[in-house]
Length: 96
Ligand code: SF4
Image 1 (spheres, rainbow, N blue to C red):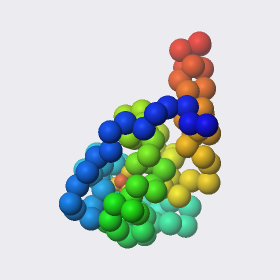
Image 2 (image 1 turned 90 degrees about the vertical axis):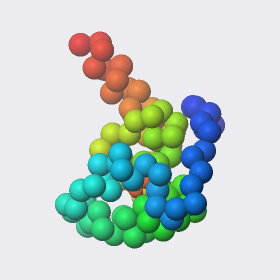
Image 3 (image 1 turned 90 degrees about the horizontal axis):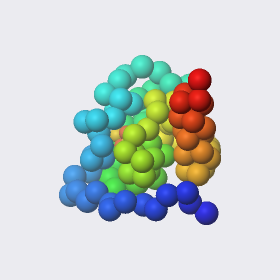
């Protein structure tokens, strides 16, 4: 069960993710656990709507308008798990 409903999907005729200009992962070229940003770009960001629609960062951005840097496109965590973690962190921040 998802915690949030999907917002309106962003449509584009480009093969590049509509979030690319705002996405820190797309803009950086440092290594991330064996995958470089260049590999992520080829697999997700610049590979068309089917590919970037499966990116966990893209999905999270579309659900809550933000996404922590630690979320990778191929995260093994479910969307619900990621959002629960973000919410827990947010709750802890405000409970100090
Ligand atoms: S990492 Fe995901 S959200 Fe960021 S530009 Fe690539 S496909 Fe889009």
